[in-house]
Image (cartoon, rainbow, N blue to C red; front, side, top):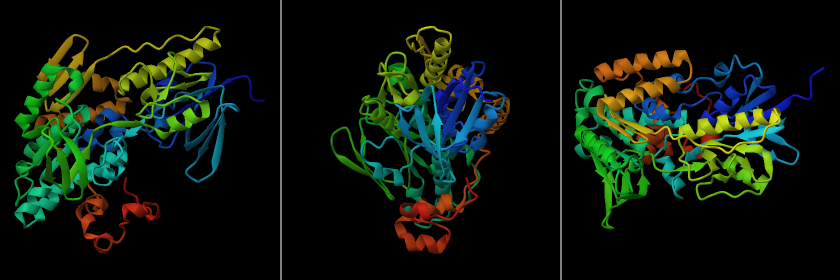
Length: 462
Protein backbone atom coordinates (compact mmCIF):
# COMPACT_ATOMS: atom_id res chain seq x y z
CA UNK A 1 0.00 0.00 0.00
CA UNK A 2 1.35 3.42 -0.95
CA UNK A 3 2.67 5.63 1.79
CA UNK A 4 0.23 8.55 1.79
CA UNK A 5 2.41 10.46 4.25
CA UNK A 6 5.05 11.23 1.65
CA UNK A 7 5.21 14.96 1.00
CA UNK A 8 3.93 15.78 -2.50
CA UNK A 9 5.62 18.52 -4.50
CA UNK A 10 4.25 19.78 -7.81
CA UNK A 11 6.56 21.88 -9.98
CA UNK A 12 5.04 23.80 -12.86
CA UNK A 13 7.62 24.54 -15.56
CA UNK A 14 10.77 22.77 -16.73
CA UNK A 15 12.94 25.86 -17.27
CA UNK A 16 15.93 26.79 -15.15
CA UNK A 17 13.94 27.41 -11.96
CA UNK A 18 11.75 24.30 -12.18
CA UNK A 19 14.54 21.99 -13.29
CA UNK A 20 16.96 23.10 -10.57
CA UNK A 21 14.22 22.76 -7.96
CA UNK A 22 13.55 19.19 -9.07
CA UNK A 23 17.26 18.35 -9.05
CA UNK A 24 17.77 19.68 -5.53
CA UNK A 25 14.86 17.58 -4.23
CA UNK A 26 16.48 14.38 -5.51
CA UNK A 27 17.41 12.96 -2.09
CA UNK A 28 14.58 14.55 -0.14
CA UNK A 29 11.73 12.37 1.23
CA UNK A 30 9.25 13.77 -1.27
CA UNK A 31 7.38 12.74 -4.40
CA UNK A 32 7.87 15.31 -7.14
CA UNK A 33 5.66 15.84 -10.19
CA UNK A 34 7.07 18.23 -12.79
CA UNK A 35 4.44 19.51 -15.22
CA UNK A 36 5.35 21.30 -18.46
CA UNK A 37 3.56 21.89 -21.75
CA UNK A 38 6.76 20.87 -23.59
CA UNK A 39 8.97 17.85 -23.21
CA UNK A 40 12.27 19.74 -23.20
CA UNK A 41 14.31 22.05 -21.00
CA UNK A 42 15.28 25.13 -22.96
CA UNK A 43 18.72 26.69 -22.51
CA UNK A 44 17.35 30.06 -23.56
CA UNK A 45 20.63 32.06 -23.51
CA UNK A 46 21.78 30.11 -26.57
CA UNK A 47 18.59 30.34 -28.63
CA UNK A 48 20.18 32.96 -30.87
CA UNK A 49 22.77 30.36 -31.88
CA UNK A 50 19.99 28.03 -33.00
CA UNK A 51 18.43 30.89 -35.00
CA UNK A 52 21.72 31.72 -36.73
CA UNK A 53 22.74 28.15 -37.59
CA UNK A 54 25.45 27.43 -35.02
CA UNK A 55 23.72 24.90 -32.77
CA UNK A 56 20.94 22.36 -33.29
CA UNK A 57 17.66 22.23 -31.41
CA UNK A 58 18.71 19.20 -29.36
CA UNK A 59 21.80 20.94 -28.07
CA UNK A 60 19.85 23.83 -26.54
CA UNK A 61 16.74 21.82 -25.60
CA UNK A 62 17.46 18.37 -24.12
CA UNK A 63 14.47 16.25 -23.01
CA UNK A 64 13.38 16.85 -19.42
CA UNK A 65 12.83 13.12 -18.88
CA UNK A 66 16.39 12.35 -19.92
CA UNK A 67 17.84 15.01 -17.63
CA UNK A 68 15.89 13.65 -14.66
CA UNK A 69 16.12 9.95 -15.54
CA UNK A 70 18.19 9.16 -12.43
CA UNK A 71 15.88 11.11 -10.10
CA UNK A 72 13.66 8.24 -9.03
CA UNK A 73 11.37 10.47 -6.94
CA UNK A 74 10.52 12.74 -9.89
CA UNK A 75 7.74 12.10 -12.40
CA UNK A 76 7.44 14.24 -15.53
CA UNK A 77 4.03 15.09 -16.99
CA UNK A 78 3.59 16.75 -20.38
CA UNK A 79 0.49 18.89 -19.89
CA UNK A 80 -0.66 22.51 -20.01
CA UNK A 81 -1.69 23.95 -16.64
CA UNK A 82 -5.09 25.62 -16.72
CA UNK A 83 -6.15 26.17 -13.12
CA UNK A 84 -4.83 26.51 -9.57
CA UNK A 85 -7.07 25.69 -6.60
CA UNK A 86 -5.07 26.82 -3.60
CA UNK A 87 -7.75 25.86 -1.09
CA UNK A 88 -8.01 22.29 -2.34
CA UNK A 89 -4.26 22.30 -3.10
CA UNK A 90 -4.66 21.01 -6.63
CA UNK A 91 -3.35 21.92 -10.08
CA UNK A 92 -5.49 21.16 -13.12
CA UNK A 93 -3.83 20.61 -16.48
CA UNK A 94 -4.77 19.38 -19.95
CA UNK A 95 -2.69 16.69 -21.63
CA UNK A 96 -1.92 16.60 -25.38
CA UNK A 97 -4.69 14.02 -25.90
CA UNK A 98 -7.15 16.56 -24.43
CA UNK A 99 -7.70 14.62 -21.22
CA UNK A 100 -7.68 16.50 -17.93
CA UNK A 101 -5.30 15.71 -15.10
CA UNK A 102 -5.54 16.95 -11.53
CA UNK A 103 -2.39 16.96 -9.40
CA UNK A 104 -2.62 17.25 -5.64
CA UNK A 105 0.24 18.84 -3.72
CA UNK A 106 1.56 19.69 -0.28
CA UNK A 107 4.04 22.18 -1.73
CA UNK A 108 3.71 23.93 -5.08
CA UNK A 109 6.52 25.57 -7.07
CA UNK A 110 5.32 27.62 -10.04
CA UNK A 111 8.16 28.42 -12.43
CA UNK A 112 6.38 29.13 -15.70
CA UNK A 113 8.89 31.68 -16.99
CA UNK A 114 8.17 34.57 -19.33
CA UNK A 115 7.19 35.30 -22.92
CA UNK A 116 7.97 38.10 -25.35
CA UNK A 117 6.34 41.47 -24.74
CA UNK A 118 5.36 43.73 -27.63
CA UNK A 119 4.33 46.56 -25.32
CA UNK A 120 0.67 46.43 -26.30
CA UNK A 121 1.30 45.79 -30.00
CA UNK A 122 0.88 42.02 -30.23
CA UNK A 123 0.11 42.43 -33.95
CA UNK A 124 3.85 43.00 -34.46
CA UNK A 125 4.56 39.36 -33.60
CA UNK A 126 3.33 38.15 -36.99
CA UNK A 127 6.05 40.05 -38.83
CA UNK A 128 8.73 40.35 -36.13
CA UNK A 129 9.02 37.09 -34.17
CA UNK A 130 10.60 37.11 -30.75
CA UNK A 131 13.06 34.57 -29.44
CA UNK A 132 11.66 32.78 -26.41
CA UNK A 133 10.95 29.26 -27.68
CA UNK A 134 12.41 26.62 -29.98
CA UNK A 135 9.62 27.38 -32.46
CA UNK A 136 10.61 31.06 -32.43
CA UNK A 137 14.27 30.26 -33.11
CA UNK A 138 13.48 27.83 -35.94
CA UNK A 139 11.09 30.35 -37.48
CA UNK A 140 13.79 33.00 -37.35
CA UNK A 141 16.35 30.63 -38.82
CA UNK A 142 14.01 30.13 -41.76
CA UNK A 143 13.56 33.87 -42.16
CA UNK A 144 17.25 34.73 -41.88
CA UNK A 145 18.62 32.09 -44.24
CA UNK A 146 15.52 32.32 -46.43
CA UNK A 147 16.16 36.04 -46.93
CA UNK A 148 19.53 35.31 -48.55
CA UNK A 149 17.91 32.66 -50.75
CA UNK A 150 15.25 35.12 -51.89
CA UNK A 151 17.83 37.84 -52.54
CA UNK A 152 19.75 35.41 -54.77
CA UNK A 153 16.70 34.88 -56.99
CA UNK A 154 15.48 38.49 -56.96
CA UNK A 155 15.96 40.50 -60.18
CA UNK A 156 14.92 43.92 -58.91
CA UNK A 157 17.77 45.72 -57.04
CA UNK A 158 15.43 47.48 -54.62
CA UNK A 159 13.62 44.29 -53.74
CA UNK A 160 16.96 42.52 -53.33
CA UNK A 161 18.14 45.25 -50.99
CA UNK A 162 15.00 44.75 -48.88
CA UNK A 163 15.77 41.03 -48.56
CA UNK A 164 19.32 41.85 -47.49
CA UNK A 165 18.22 44.30 -44.80
CA UNK A 166 17.75 42.93 -41.28
CA UNK A 167 16.28 44.93 -38.40
CA UNK A 168 16.83 43.76 -34.82
CA UNK A 169 14.64 45.53 -32.27
CA UNK A 170 16.09 45.72 -28.77
CA UNK A 171 19.62 46.51 -27.60
CA UNK A 172 19.87 44.10 -24.69
CA UNK A 173 22.05 40.96 -24.71
CA UNK A 174 19.74 39.02 -27.04
CA UNK A 175 19.44 41.81 -29.58
CA UNK A 176 23.18 42.50 -29.54
CA UNK A 177 24.05 38.82 -29.93
CA UNK A 178 21.59 38.31 -32.79
CA UNK A 179 22.72 41.44 -34.64
CA UNK A 180 26.36 40.46 -34.29
CA UNK A 181 25.74 36.91 -35.48
CA UNK A 182 23.75 37.98 -38.56
CA UNK A 183 26.48 40.45 -39.51
CA UNK A 184 29.19 37.84 -39.01
CA UNK A 185 27.14 35.25 -40.88
CA UNK A 186 26.78 37.54 -43.89
CA UNK A 187 30.44 38.46 -44.01
CA UNK A 188 32.04 35.14 -43.09
CA UNK A 189 29.64 32.22 -42.76
CA UNK A 190 28.02 32.58 -46.19
CA UNK A 191 31.09 33.74 -48.09
CA UNK A 192 31.32 32.10 -51.52
CA UNK A 193 27.93 30.38 -51.19
CA UNK A 194 26.03 32.53 -53.69
CA UNK A 195 26.63 33.49 -57.32
CA UNK A 196 24.36 36.48 -57.93
CA UNK A 197 24.66 38.28 -54.61
CA UNK A 198 27.42 39.07 -52.16
CA UNK A 199 26.03 38.22 -48.68
CA UNK A 200 28.42 40.81 -47.25
CA UNK A 201 26.15 43.48 -48.80
CA UNK A 202 23.61 42.70 -46.07
CA UNK A 203 22.68 45.61 -43.83
CA UNK A 204 21.96 44.94 -40.15
CA UNK A 205 20.19 47.64 -38.16
CA UNK A 206 19.98 47.45 -34.35
CA UNK A 207 17.23 49.68 -32.90
CA UNK A 208 16.87 50.51 -29.21
CA UNK A 209 14.87 53.12 -27.35
CA UNK A 210 17.55 53.79 -24.73
CA UNK A 211 20.63 55.97 -24.83
CA UNK A 212 22.99 53.03 -25.31
CA UNK A 213 22.97 49.31 -25.99
CA UNK A 214 23.67 46.88 -23.14
CA UNK A 215 22.80 49.66 -20.68
CA UNK A 216 23.09 47.39 -17.62
CA UNK A 217 26.73 46.59 -18.47
CA UNK A 218 27.92 50.15 -17.88
CA UNK A 219 29.18 52.84 -20.25
CA UNK A 220 32.61 51.36 -20.93
CA UNK A 221 31.43 47.88 -21.94
CA UNK A 222 28.48 49.32 -23.81
CA UNK A 223 30.84 51.41 -25.92
CA UNK A 224 33.18 48.48 -26.54
CA UNK A 225 30.25 46.34 -27.67
CA UNK A 226 28.99 49.13 -29.93
CA UNK A 227 32.42 49.56 -31.49
CA UNK A 228 32.70 45.83 -32.22
CA UNK A 229 29.23 45.78 -33.78
CA UNK A 230 30.11 48.74 -35.97
CA UNK A 231 33.31 46.96 -37.02
CA UNK A 232 31.10 44.08 -38.19
CA UNK A 233 28.97 46.52 -40.18
CA UNK A 234 25.98 46.82 -37.82
CA UNK A 235 24.22 50.20 -37.79
CA UNK A 236 23.10 51.16 -34.27
CA UNK A 237 20.10 53.46 -33.75
CA UNK A 238 19.66 54.34 -30.08
CA UNK A 239 16.96 56.67 -28.82
CA UNK A 240 14.68 55.18 -31.48
CA UNK A 241 11.37 53.38 -31.06
CA UNK A 242 9.66 51.07 -33.54
CA UNK A 243 6.08 52.27 -33.99
CA UNK A 244 4.95 50.07 -36.88
CA UNK A 245 5.80 46.68 -38.35
CA UNK A 246 4.49 45.11 -41.57
CA UNK A 247 5.75 42.58 -44.17
CA UNK A 248 7.75 45.22 -46.02
CA UNK A 249 9.49 47.05 -43.20
CA UNK A 250 9.30 49.01 -39.97
CA UNK A 251 8.44 52.55 -38.95
CA UNK A 252 10.93 54.06 -36.52
CA UNK A 253 10.43 57.18 -34.42
CA UNK A 254 13.89 58.68 -34.10
CA UNK A 255 15.43 60.66 -31.24
CA UNK A 256 14.37 63.99 -32.78
CA UNK A 257 10.72 62.89 -32.95
CA UNK A 258 10.56 62.31 -36.69
CA UNK A 259 9.43 59.03 -38.23
CA UNK A 260 11.64 57.05 -40.57
CA UNK A 261 10.60 54.20 -42.82
CA UNK A 262 13.08 51.30 -43.03
CA UNK A 263 12.35 48.91 -45.89
CA UNK A 264 13.32 45.38 -44.85
CA UNK A 265 11.95 41.87 -45.05
CA UNK A 266 13.41 40.31 -41.90
CA UNK A 267 12.55 41.75 -38.50
CA UNK A 268 13.55 40.25 -35.14
CA UNK A 269 11.98 41.38 -31.87
CA UNK A 270 14.32 41.26 -28.87
CA UNK A 271 12.77 43.97 -26.69
CA UNK A 272 10.80 43.35 -23.54
CA UNK A 273 9.42 40.36 -21.66
CA UNK A 274 6.07 39.56 -20.11
CA UNK A 275 5.52 36.98 -17.39
CA UNK A 276 3.69 33.79 -18.27
CA UNK A 277 -0.12 34.06 -18.15
CA UNK A 278 0.05 31.50 -15.34
CA UNK A 279 1.28 34.31 -13.08
CA UNK A 280 -2.08 35.99 -13.60
CA UNK A 281 -3.96 32.76 -12.90
CA UNK A 282 -1.96 32.26 -9.71
CA UNK A 283 -2.58 35.86 -8.64
CA UNK A 284 -6.30 35.43 -9.23
CA UNK A 285 -6.35 32.24 -7.17
CA UNK A 286 -4.33 33.71 -4.30
CA UNK A 287 -5.37 37.36 -4.24
CA UNK A 288 -1.78 38.48 -4.91
CA UNK A 289 -0.96 41.38 -7.19
CA UNK A 290 0.97 41.53 -10.47
CA UNK A 291 3.22 44.30 -11.73
CA UNK A 292 3.12 45.90 -15.19
CA UNK A 293 5.16 43.03 -16.64
CA UNK A 294 2.67 40.49 -15.29
CA UNK A 295 4.99 39.20 -12.57
CA UNK A 296 3.37 38.11 -9.33
CA UNK A 297 4.36 39.76 -6.06
CA UNK A 298 5.96 37.34 -3.59
CA UNK A 299 7.30 37.54 -0.04
CA UNK A 300 11.03 37.60 0.67
CA UNK A 301 11.12 33.79 0.79
CA UNK A 302 9.50 33.53 -2.70
CA UNK A 303 6.14 32.37 -1.30
CA UNK A 304 2.72 33.90 -1.89
CA UNK A 305 1.14 36.02 0.87
CA UNK A 306 -1.12 33.78 2.91
CA UNK A 307 0.11 30.63 1.16
CA UNK A 308 3.51 29.58 2.54
CA UNK A 309 3.23 26.28 0.67
CA UNK A 310 3.15 28.02 -2.73
CA UNK A 311 6.33 29.38 -4.33
CA UNK A 312 6.50 31.58 -7.42
CA UNK A 313 10.06 31.66 -8.76
CA UNK A 314 12.13 32.72 -11.74
CA UNK A 315 10.98 35.18 -14.38
CA UNK A 316 7.39 35.25 -13.15
CA UNK A 317 8.10 36.58 -9.64
CA UNK A 318 8.31 40.24 -8.67
CA UNK A 319 10.84 40.66 -5.88
CA UNK A 320 13.32 43.49 -5.22
CA UNK A 321 13.52 44.44 -8.92
CA UNK A 322 15.57 41.35 -9.65
CA UNK A 323 16.53 40.97 -13.33
CA UNK A 324 14.89 38.33 -15.50
CA UNK A 325 18.03 36.27 -16.04
CA UNK A 326 18.86 32.59 -15.78
CA UNK A 327 20.84 33.03 -12.56
CA UNK A 328 17.81 34.42 -10.72
CA UNK A 329 15.72 31.49 -11.96
CA UNK A 330 18.29 28.88 -10.91
CA UNK A 331 18.87 30.37 -7.49
CA UNK A 332 15.19 30.94 -6.70
CA UNK A 333 14.35 27.39 -7.78
CA UNK A 334 17.08 26.02 -5.54
CA UNK A 335 15.86 28.27 -2.71
CA UNK A 336 12.31 26.90 -3.00
CA UNK A 337 13.60 23.30 -2.93
CA UNK A 338 15.82 23.99 0.07
CA UNK A 339 12.93 25.69 1.91
CA UNK A 340 10.78 22.59 1.45
CA UNK A 341 13.60 20.42 2.80
CA UNK A 342 14.12 22.75 5.75
CA UNK A 343 10.46 22.59 6.67
CA UNK A 344 10.47 18.80 6.51
CA UNK A 345 13.23 18.94 9.15
CA UNK A 346 11.27 21.36 11.30
CA UNK A 347 13.32 24.43 10.37
CA UNK A 348 11.95 27.84 9.48
CA UNK A 349 12.05 29.24 5.96
CA UNK A 350 14.94 31.53 5.08
CA UNK A 351 14.93 34.77 3.11
CA UNK A 352 15.90 34.46 -0.55
CA UNK A 353 19.22 36.16 -1.20
CA UNK A 354 20.29 36.60 -4.80
CA UNK A 355 24.00 36.32 -5.55
CA UNK A 356 24.76 38.33 -8.67
CA UNK A 357 26.90 36.21 -10.99
CA UNK A 358 27.29 39.02 -13.49
CA UNK A 359 26.19 39.49 -17.08
CA UNK A 360 27.78 38.60 -20.39
CA UNK A 361 27.07 38.84 -24.09
CA UNK A 362 28.93 37.63 -27.17
CA UNK A 363 29.36 40.11 -29.97
CA UNK A 364 31.28 38.02 -32.51
CA UNK A 365 33.81 35.22 -32.76
CA UNK A 366 36.35 35.60 -29.96
CA UNK A 367 34.73 38.80 -28.70
CA UNK A 368 32.41 39.11 -25.71
CA UNK A 369 31.72 41.55 -22.89
CA UNK A 370 31.49 40.43 -19.26
CA UNK A 371 30.36 42.36 -16.19
CA UNK A 372 30.95 40.57 -12.89
CA UNK A 373 30.92 42.68 -9.74
CA UNK A 374 33.90 45.01 -10.18
CA UNK A 375 35.38 42.97 -13.02
CA UNK A 376 34.86 44.26 -16.57
CA UNK A 377 36.19 42.16 -19.43
CA UNK A 378 35.89 42.51 -23.17
CA UNK A 379 37.40 41.02 -26.29
CA UNK A 380 39.08 37.61 -26.23
CA UNK A 381 39.31 37.35 -22.42
CA UNK A 382 35.61 38.08 -22.14
CA UNK A 383 34.89 35.47 -24.77
CA UNK A 384 36.94 32.83 -22.90
CA UNK A 385 34.93 33.52 -19.75
CA UNK A 386 31.68 33.36 -21.72
CA UNK A 387 32.74 30.00 -23.18
CA UNK A 388 33.67 28.55 -19.78
CA UNK A 389 30.39 29.63 -18.17
CA UNK A 390 28.19 28.29 -20.96
CA UNK A 391 29.99 24.96 -21.13
CA UNK A 392 29.51 24.65 -17.37
CA UNK A 393 25.80 25.39 -17.40
CA UNK A 394 24.83 23.44 -20.51
CA UNK A 395 22.80 20.46 -19.37
CA UNK A 396 24.34 17.02 -19.91
CA UNK A 397 27.72 15.75 -21.10
CA UNK A 398 26.41 14.89 -24.58
CA UNK A 399 25.12 18.42 -25.08
CA UNK A 400 28.40 19.94 -23.93
CA UNK A 401 30.34 17.69 -26.29
CA UNK A 402 28.07 18.45 -29.27
CA UNK A 403 28.09 22.18 -28.57
CA UNK A 404 31.89 22.18 -28.32
CA UNK A 405 32.10 20.37 -31.66
CA UNK A 406 29.87 22.93 -33.38
CA UNK A 407 31.56 25.86 -31.67
CA UNK A 408 34.96 24.62 -32.78
CA UNK A 409 33.81 24.50 -36.40
CA UNK A 410 32.15 27.89 -36.22
CA UNK A 411 34.94 29.65 -34.39
CA UNK A 412 37.62 28.13 -36.62
CA UNK A 413 36.02 28.75 -40.00
CA UNK A 414 33.02 30.99 -39.44
CA UNK A 415 30.80 28.36 -41.09
CA UNK A 416 27.39 27.27 -39.83
CA UNK A 417 26.50 23.61 -39.38
CA UNK A 418 22.74 24.07 -38.94
CA UNK A 419 21.35 25.83 -42.01
CA UNK A 420 18.44 23.56 -42.90
CA UNK A 421 15.18 25.42 -43.48
CA UNK A 422 11.84 24.01 -44.60
CA UNK A 423 9.55 25.23 -47.36
CA UNK A 424 6.98 26.24 -44.78
CA UNK A 425 9.57 28.26 -42.89
CA UNK A 426 10.78 30.04 -46.01
CA UNK A 427 7.49 30.63 -47.81
CA UNK A 428 4.89 30.47 -45.09
CA UNK A 429 4.53 33.85 -43.31
CA UNK A 430 7.67 35.23 -44.99
CA UNK A 431 8.09 35.19 -48.75
CA UNK A 432 4.55 35.49 -50.05
CA UNK A 433 2.67 36.67 -46.98
CA UNK A 434 1.85 40.00 -48.59
CA UNK A 435 0.63 38.32 -51.79
CA UNK A 436 -2.47 36.96 -50.12
CA UNK A 437 -3.47 33.64 -48.61
CA UNK A 438 -4.54 32.20 -51.96
CA UNK A 439 -1.17 32.72 -53.62
CA UNK A 440 0.65 31.13 -50.71
CA UNK A 441 -1.65 28.11 -50.85
CA UNK A 442 -0.99 27.80 -54.57
CA UNK A 443 2.78 27.72 -54.13
CA UNK A 444 2.75 25.64 -50.94
CA UNK A 445 -0.46 23.57 -50.85
CA UNK A 446 0.12 22.53 -47.23
CA UNK A 447 0.47 26.12 -46.05
CA UNK A 448 -2.16 27.45 -43.65
CA UNK A 449 -2.46 31.14 -42.94
CA UNK A 450 -1.39 32.03 -39.34
CA UNK A 451 -4.90 33.26 -38.55
CA UNK A 452 -6.14 29.71 -39.23
CA UNK A 453 -3.20 27.92 -37.62
CA UNK A 454 -5.45 25.65 -35.56
CA UNK A 455 -6.60 24.04 -38.79
CA UNK A 456 -3.07 23.37 -40.05
CA UNK A 457 -2.30 19.84 -41.20
CA UNK A 458 0.08 17.79 -39.13
CA UNK A 459 3.73 18.23 -40.03
CA UNK A 460 6.81 16.21 -39.22
CA UNK A 461 8.92 19.38 -39.23
CA UNK A 462 10.15 20.88 -35.97
